[in-house]
Amino acid sequence: MTLAYIFAHHVALVLPCTLTCCRYFVLDPNLGQLQYFINEQSKDQKPRGSLPLIGSLVTPSDEFPFMFTVYASNGQLFKLRACDLCERQVWMTQLQLSARRHSDSSAKVSHFIPLCFLHISLSLSLSLSLSLSLSLHLSTPFSLLRCPLQVMSRAEEQQKNLQQSIESLPGGGPLSSLDPDLLLLKATSMAALSCLGECLSILQHSVSQAARSVTTRTQGLNTGELEPVKNGGLTGLPTSSSNKPPASPCFGTDAVEPSEESTDTEDNEEEDLGVLDEQRSIILHLLSQLKLGMDLTRVVLPTFILEKRSLLEMYANFMAHPDLFLVITTGASAEERMVRFVEYYLTAFYEGRKGAVAKKPYNPILGESFLCSWDVPRERVRPLRTTGSSSRYRLRFVAEQVSHHPPVSAFYCECKERRMCVNAHVWTKSKFMGMSVGVSMVGEGVLHLLEHDEQYVFTLPCAYARSILTVPWVELGGKVSICCAKSGYSAIVTFHTKPFYGGKVHRVTAEVKHNSTSTIVCKAQGEWNGTLEFTYSSGETKVIDTSKLPVIMKRIRPLEKQGQYESRRLWQHVTQALKEGDIDGATEHKHELEDRQRSEEKQRAASRSPWKPKHFIKEVETSWCQSKTLS
Image (cartoon, rainbow, N blue to C red; front, side, top):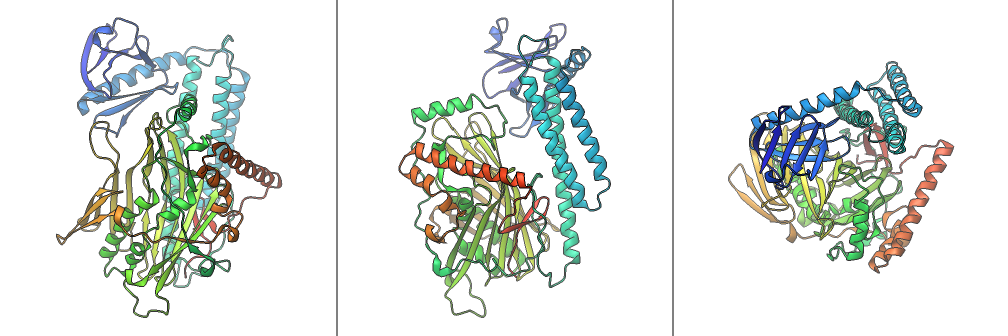
């Protein structure tokens, strides 16, 4: 396989480059195009495809060694792989020079610009200038973030309006949607907003970290009652949780009585039927309207791909081994507690993502909640020095959809007797990736061990739905971190995605180390939905088969005793229709819920009354916390 570059004098230089498919690429600097052919012998024929370099972006890729990606302004992309780092740099440099040369020459050509574009550009500039000038008068670090967040939100809306205006231009007019200047404008504006978003994310994370250190220094033993912060639509990137030790009574006065709950009998397994012919045609029609990298958050997906549970309940199912969770705090040392947390973390995904079928949980509507609990036999956890009359520990869980745009879920779980709780918030961002869909779990959680005054901050991996046209399946990917600032121990867990050729699926590796000495105290490898092998610094090893671990079923109230916005009661008609195979009925009930949500959103907008979650409060712009947590 070769990647050829034609110089200005058409002297061919052939460089070997490994591609995902056999194609012969030609870079023509005169036309400003990257063309490809079936093979080198057919290069004198019409190219099978081409990528315009005007306004394009050439970046290195981390998917494979020496890979780089060429993003065109029309949304297309080519992924190329060189044989070494030097060769990749040569090609990236030549492609970037060609793209810049054609972009600069195109910018010198003046065209008539419709007034709507001038209005959009002017209003965007004015809103940026006005908002940035106002932000200079704000006093606190968190208030400094609010105005840029609003500016980013408005800028994104303006950019969408600009893109729609360009695409709606008539084909026979003086200016078409394929005009080089307009293509460059679209690409530049999208790239600028993307860079600003990344910068803002870094800024938010820095401010949140600073707030944590200030909170840790200023709080005493008795922190008092948590003060609710004014709630509004979450417009920022939720990337951090508060490390403030919980301070008020658990769950408040509306806690669920244990006598009202019964052991759950629902089966989480989904039937693996593949994709039927009529369903495949619907998916193909949907795919024809999507572009690579497109955000699927607001895209309405067909009902037949739905899993028969809410996303909030899926988070609860990650606690299917509560005995492993409770045993964390019984560790005799900080090292042992970190290792136990990693063991629990790696074993949680099998039950949470049970079954290999790639189906999508219900998108929770704003205000939806899910409450449940677990009764854990004391013999599965090392008993306390002073044991009570009960023979079981009770672990309670609550999850709530705290934001709709962007979709943010928050969940909290506690065991009062063991004096431990976990608080987390997750923003699900889904993207179209050709023959698969990627879901990023943006956000983090904090495990509080009050007995040891330790906080463990952790993140979540990405999820991918592969082979969406044949037999869809799920895999996890990406690096996640677990760290405890007090003890100085941290862990890196890597979920490996299957490579194009060969390799194993569902592979995971992990390392636990002491930061100050850089000593590796534990290593783990295996499959997150199969066998995991742990190797400790002492030389001992332990093997855990996640598929054979005993599951403790959650306890939940029957539908008639659940609140109107609790997940199972809210989605009961959709779930029943899916169980009966009535896709049309499920779609109708789903639309009713969505219409009701839109109607309520309009009423709140008309009355200017912001949404206020029931179980959680917003501590800062990027963090949600359970309003009444463990003392």
